Image 1 (cartoon, rainbow, N blue to C red):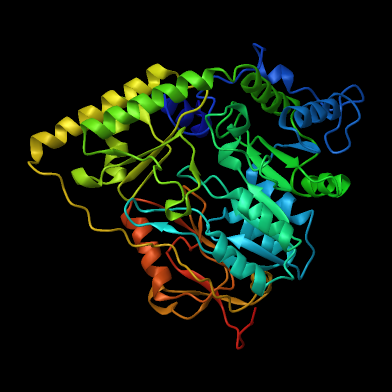
Image 2 (image 1 turned 30 degrees about the horizontal axis):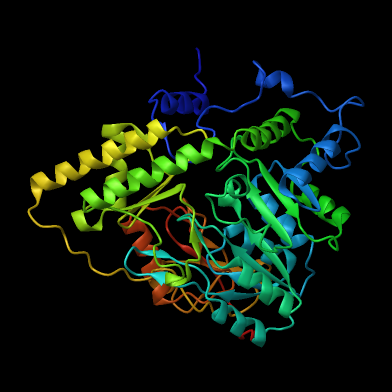
Length: 483
């Protein structure tokens, strides 16, 4: 009996649809390797090949070249994803008991690092764009209030840009970090392309961040899981950083994987002029959609509105609220009727990511699809739908009953959703598509939390962290931990 491999079969079926890809990974099936056989590059680690955990040859030389390209003190390859990069960044700089100021819109790996490192997190909320239903930037005044109260914190961890392309005022944050003698760490996973064109926002590397993480697979041309961790401060111990990286990833790294990351960066560096034509076409098509339809292609006209300092133009955010369809419905229409794959769909928005591997023709095809969707709306409606203002479903003002690490070692019980209010959450609850933590380990579960989870599910999203039968893992602690 011949058995078909399920993963291979499933992936082959998916790529056979031959859609125009506006999602990650950014290579869109066009990884540049200058080799006809990827597997031949997966050479075994022998005395003739270099070792990534203790490089002395071509890997070390490549890291030094990366530093020259990005203008850093040093840059490391990450082959275990941005999660590994975030945990390595935090784990190499902070010690158990240290305080860290954390952007509430962080990746779940930041919370994992806080938990594993025994750190005390202080969360900072973002402004919320009620009109479109997504988060803006961090207000520097809000951040400084947190810094003044927690002046003993060792570092500030900021996400910029976000899934919606929102860039906060990183230069202001860098100045605050200097003022309070804290390290400034930036998760710039979605902005690995920023240094390669003046049409993009300034990279956190230019704005004074001490360490910056880039996802080489998301917007450049590496395969998924490839990232770069940049050191931008000569006082950071490079040996400790490398040791921490190889705590979270194997030193038996595939040479083919390293080739894919390296070639992606070199290709974008050498072909960066392609961004000009792409940006020009995005701007032209954005005006066509905004002037000719009730579908809104988001642009941040008012600098500073909702503390959005800049927007990444390659993150195409389309809002369908005025024509009365959800982001999930719009994404389904793009996939099924027009052969276009978006990155994210939620509420009334969809997000599409244009990379250097998308052509201006791809952008024009997207506009044709948008116009087709709008014509379908005109046949059904006379007047545009007036949307109800969005409510921020993400929990604000995080109040921890204990530090996240402590719940890891507590006895737990599985509890039905109807009975979890005021219980202390043991497992992180997060969204599958964006990996945004909705409930932090050590946080008391409130009605607002449950409303947030319901809103994600109503939008067609998936919640992770609960059991298969939808129960919560909670701990029983008789005391409050005061931060």
